[in-house]
Image (tube, rainbow, N blue to C red):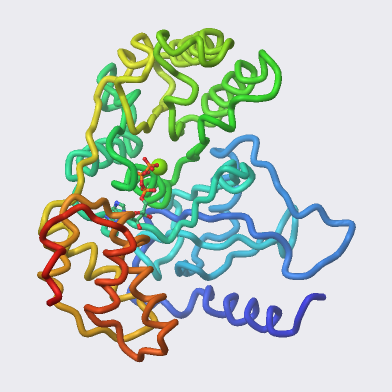
Length: 373
Ligand SMILES: Nc1ncnc2c1ncn2[C@@H]1O[C@H](COP(=O)(O)OP(=O)(O)OP(=O)(O)O)[C@@H](O)[C@H]1O
Ligand SMILES: [Mg+2]
């Protein structure tokens, strides 16, 4: 066994899941769980499980956990086929509610974590993303659609393209979406679909769409899609571009009308995309650089997580960071300022540290000059 503390934790979490605690009969609408394995090591046991039929699993799970209280981040344990196998409760709507016969139970098994490109850390939420209201509205539509696919009939969202300058929140938004939804999200970087040999990409693209179709409703997110869907004028750069583009087109078209598979692509440059691929995206949503208010919010949100106190003129920083993306603000300005403060044994971050960061970022902005004099 790994540790006593783990055992203890599991016991308490079992107790927490007891039927007595929740007096107000608050029933769960939705519970999303993730398999986490056994509470102890035993070499004969295979830690991975594969759910062949999510609906069947839902019935099986609901029956055995009926009446239990579900609380996010606590655990539920299988009592039947694989006794003591643990599932972490990722989402409980509402939190601290009771599983009833009407509770939807979803399991994320999950490509998200098996795929090495998939670095989804599910602590990003939509609220963390500043601005990008168009994209957020679309995410709302997707969420509504996945809640009730039939009601959309032929008007379902299918293919959406996110485009915009680097560091404006495209990948971040999809990570938040993954966190928000209880359907599988296949997150791939386009470059990882290109193999060493001609034909590798086609078969990888085929496998990806096949898996997503089998597990529909689902979402495919192809980050940096320009790497595989280059405009034909760039074909001289890679000999197999047209083969890859054709595979992508075939797969995008091959998804049956009634299958709820949504494909989201992201790119810095939508004009470099193959026209046929581009035309299949029903909507192109631009991710813009943050305006003054949005930069202020990004700065404030990031400062809250800093390990040092600060004494800063935020309005001034907002001015000085005009034209920078969310990533630049966080990584190039705030992080460099913090590190500069730490390296100088400062107890608080001051405008001097910010000035250092801005100078090392070499902003060609005349406002910077004289700002600190
Ligand atoms: N709109 C935003 N709100 C809050 N933080 C942001 C925003 N945009 C970017 N950031 C910060 O920048 C980081 C990088 O953003 P992200 O990876 O989503 O950019 P991207 O648009 O996918 O860039 P690229 O085109 O280079 O892939 C985020 O993790 C976050 O810290
Ligand atoms: Mg990105």
